[in-house]
Image 1 (cartoon, rainbow, N blue to C red):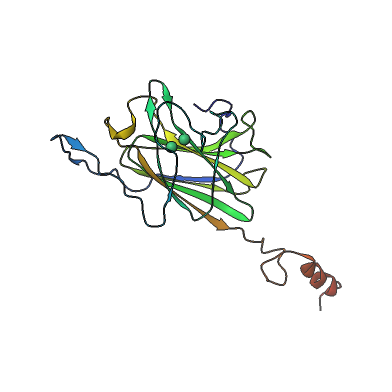
Image 2: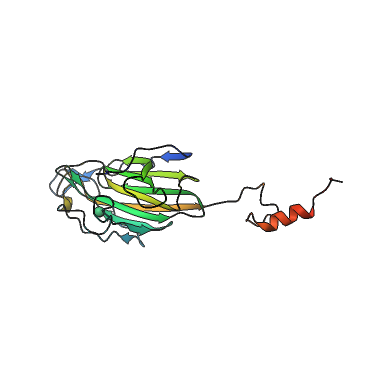
Length: 222
Ligand SMILES: [Ca+2]
Ligand SMILES: [Ca+2]
């Protein structure tokens, strides 16, 4: 559950895309059709939280645990995780990312189960009462989805990502149900660029050096 997380307030321009198709089902061991398992790509970071329907654990339960637990992630990182949903509850995987100096942050999710991703504004601190969803995507089982948040969007330099099932039942651990438990999520960021008008000396930074150039050229144009 995302108790304490407010609904979206659109304070920014954003791009939202669903990419790729849904993977084709293949014959399973029991003769029925099943979706192919998603492999963790080389370099992928394991989530490190065991699939356990009895609770949220102490790794990344976010606001569903007291105290709230988060995993730190970084731009360029790929993480391989698992999630469950059973009897009205679901696993919640929450990640914090430093986003200072970037113009956009993107997330791509490939999932074995119906999933949802939230990009959450931390509101000058990790606060389960004041943080709110900036944007979200739902990704079908066997599918891949992506979302880009364009800056300036946050009033802090930390962005909070939530990954979990979009269902609250029918996803036991051990891929024992209709769906698998695995997902792969990748983050990427675009570096912030200076406004061209202010970067007078074209060195990629707007600073006092630019002001000096302006002051040295004060006066009527020839
Ligand atoms: Ca998990
Ligand atoms: Ca979790």
